[in-house]
Image (cartoon, rainbow, N blue to C red; front, side):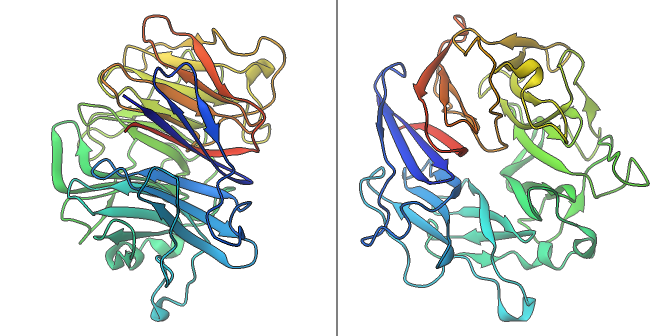
Amino acid sequence: MTYLLIIGTRKGLFTARSEDRRSWEVLGPHRLDENDDAGMSPVYTVGIDPHTHRLLVGTESWHFGPSVWHSDDLGRTWTEPGTAPIAFPEDTDASLVRAWQFAFGPEPGTVYAGVEPHALFRSTDGGDHFTLVRSLWDHPHRAEWFPGAGGAAIHTVLPGVLGSGERFPEAITVAMSTGGVYQSSDDGESWAPTNRGISAGFLPDPEPEFGQCVHKVTVAPDGSFYAQNHHGVYRSASPTTEGWRPIETGLPTDFGFAIVAHPHRAESAFNFPVVSQEVHLPPENRLRAYRTDDSGESWRAIDAGLPEEPYFGIVLRDAACTDGAEVPGFYFGTRNGDVYALTDDEEERWHRVVAHLPDVLCVRAAEV
């Protein structure tokens, strides 16, 4: 079995392949276009289609603007559609800043893109063409969503799930900065905020119906959720019926960007704390991941194999992931350009995949 990592950085796209997840062949930066105009572009989102293994890459050229490239041969060659894959209709008076998230629906060919400004797009042809989900764009709350420090964008898209025991094709969960978590049970025809329990200390009302700055939501195998908020880590079995409960006790800080659920154990997840909203550094200047195996009741540092000397790179919201394998691997990249893998639940030791890349913005992994 081959394992594939795709790594988006501030200066281009890299891939890594391995047969054992210990020794990696790293390639890049990839030359996406013939003239290499996109080769040094920042890559803010990447995706691996679980149905076809098509790779999707959201780039932002300083000259040509944002676009979506795809590869159908695991990154050897790349194609950009002749017309912009993601474009706002003229009547919206909006233009795409960048794609922040790709997610794949249960039906082959269905791809969602969460973008900036706050919007959700859907493709039914594998990512060649996307259409705006008008119901979310036209939601009466949208005028009150405002940019977080990372922009006014949808950063989480989770098709097919609303909570534990609530998995069906018409379900969609999204989260954004700032706006919070919204869910649809009718294939995106209508949307409701589901933020009860998530605080927003930066607003006059610290527990509003919407307006929370949710950095990332990840789904556990039973359909429950973990969330990393702008100050606050939460879990919910059902945001609609139960709301969210705080689970940051045992973490060195409640601020951060990335959180990753275990693909087979609902009680297990990884978190990557950051000092604060003002200080984007690892706590104590040490690179550590934190793990819970009891649904957030407690956390412990997993740092074997990570640098012991002072370290100053943090993990961004889409720079951590799992490959979802039967014995799963977990991966993260830092703003210092290092990428690490943990491939044995029992050993709990990180192994370095690659060092000294440009600033890592996003990471995705899969068995291919």
